[in-house]
Image (tube, rainbow, N blue to C red):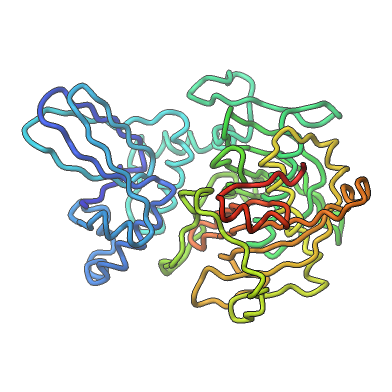
Length: 433
């Protein structure tokens, strides 16, 4: 596969006028780091001689090898009269099945600007020249307005549909009602969870300020106020949580940062965390076929007795706030009509938690970056109301990408008594029924 990514991570519009079809292979921009790692792993000598090998359009690697390395590869056939659009940082390659006539052009709509900023940072790390002359000036002027253009702010003069924004702006203060009120609070907490994990802090959600969303499965651009319990220090944060699917816990969180100030302007734009060495992994950040690939609850015979496979949390560790957060996210993503006022009915007692590492080289622990977390819990409110014990189980798969810092979580929850039958039938049970 002769890999190529457009200069400066621009969009590319390709049109075929007439002639034989063209076969395309592509890797999404979110998987670009995986592709680069796979290329370096399979061609170490070439990369040692030419560190910028990926930019020279001379490197081929079979799509089957990429898929074996855990890189999702997509294929399409372009016929006469059809367009093919490639997105920012999407590696692509193709070949013509015969004689044809086609043309291509790079385009830079307004939503490309955050990707252009990332490209500049990567080029600087690689020692490449970025822009020259007027291009540098134009990009610099554009980056001055990055906070305005990375979808957290919603300035006057930018109507909802301009430049493909398609955003709904929500002011969440003043006691007013707003859509997905329970979900957005948990998404805000998830962003702080990512930041605390990466930076070793202990920020807690104080209040929501605003958020911008699209329809259906949507990214949530959240601005919030967080505080440190130890000192009472308050800080405004920006958090991006992306819903990969509706009706399931399937989320990614690539951005959680203090709102940009004069002293930390770089943090006001999306960025890749710098790493001197490529990061290799034997697991995927996300299960692409989720929820078809159900993660089973270990059998009662095993009962988490294998200490090499599972790390069992002790009594004090069960109080970690992110454990309850994962369960609450699993419930609310499956039942999106739950409102913020309904959260007072949530009284979850965490009974048992086991952690299984996805990394063969890393023993399971409380701080495993890539892990499956098995959670047994009770619904105290429902038990008191009905007089019957309500025991539940939740399974959450968590991966923090060491190259980008992106947090991905996927999971589900069910009534414990039905867990075995559901796994056999590939079904789910409502945790709130």
